[in-house]
Image (cartoon, rainbow, N blue to C red; front, side, top):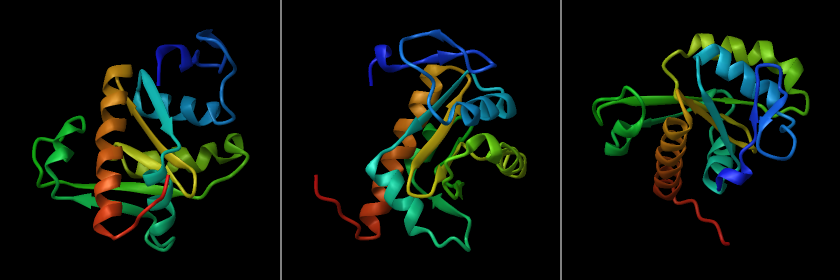
Length: 156
């Protein structure tokens, strides 16, 4: 992704930098930024985040990743001896209406570094764009590890 593909919005969802229009999930970005005090919120539609978001049983409500050295790349995680829990939310076409559900999940999981939307992708954040980008890279690496460990494959 290049800088020209990033759209910066203000707290009302109005574009302040970049070209294009905010995504349909802009209200979700704003909710995360407010709840986490984040300066940047990033969202991916990667293959591994999409596959793993659908592989976890809906009864579990999330995906656990633990014991991997790369977990130390997440903000505030000092050791590989860490269990990261990524909640999984069901997808919707009306994220404005889902804001209360997202706020509740973020309040319930203050230690989470991101969450997945089933059959959709990853959301993560950081105090700035560099930190949010690092978290995307760490989580996407771990998703691929988890997928391969489970014997999942994909064909480009």
